[in-house]
Length: 483
Image (cartoon, rainbow, N blue to C red):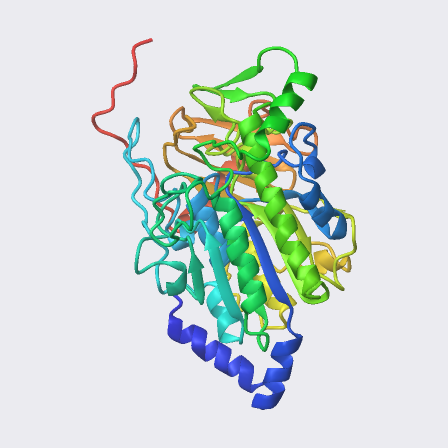
């Protein structure tokens, strides 16, 4: 395990090899700022710029038009806590031993519950710690969900923590009086997303201007409970009445049901709240004349909630299923990066990238040395952002050996080039898809392509063994349901 001692030694060595102290200060002043927007449960197809015709996201669309949009960006897990850990550490969820949302679904079926960590270990080194060690001021607001007291953002490299704690959904709801232990409401009826936005803007206005900054705004939206944003929900009710006909269509997904159309006004209003927040923060960046030296990243921690025992609040079509599942709808996320002087406005990438890539990308953009022993599973995307190179093709792996409320059962998957294999332990089955021809994963090729199926299955198992991935163990008390 990499220790904090390693971090500080690495930062000291890097700093002393650059120049004396005065020169270091000059270097810090030239380093870019970072604003990272992380949305909770936002689906790949939930934004206008990614194809939605019902939801509206003009500010996020404008961000995409000013930078690079990634059409094949992946969360490292189909649920939140593991992906959040992967962003902060550049390490696969298996490597940090957080493979389920915290504390996870402890229910069992054919397999016993796989036990993983309920917090991000303090000896994991985060991007916030590295940036702070390089002179950055670091600010966190919103959903943390990587541990309780003693494992808060301020224990992992952030100077400020506004609203981050152990909870996965907003404690006490989206409207005050809420019950958030790290964010006291100012007045009844206050809306959480607006408050987090105001706090982020206050940080921008009052920050230490001698230092570059890392602002990480991690929304509780659009996680359940699906709660209308009162300022916008009526607009979407009227829009639905005027443009949508008939009952919401559904799709059977194994033992679950998927929503097959975006038509939920409450959910749409929650996206509108995020969009307004992004617009307000970026407007403040412009007002403070920071836009030419501020990198902006936008991402979601997993796919939209589409599949449950009843339909979820959104649809990820043309992708299959959603949060909790290893189909594309569960792991493909909307991603945008704007890096001034590097990204060209309005560019689109079809490269397969993953949440572990943010850590090394930010290091390189900051002019700091890459630390591959830390971000072991991430690759810098700077050459891709600049258009000067292509991302080296690599194999991506997902390991989700847990039961989930979306009706997902334990399994794992692998993407190798355009080929994707999903293994379902509960059913002792595999499915194989060619994403180039079939991004919606409708045509299972496992029977017609037995050699490719066997090859990918063996490659997945070899990776799991190499990573010491925890595998689900049979439940001795399990009794199959009578047919």
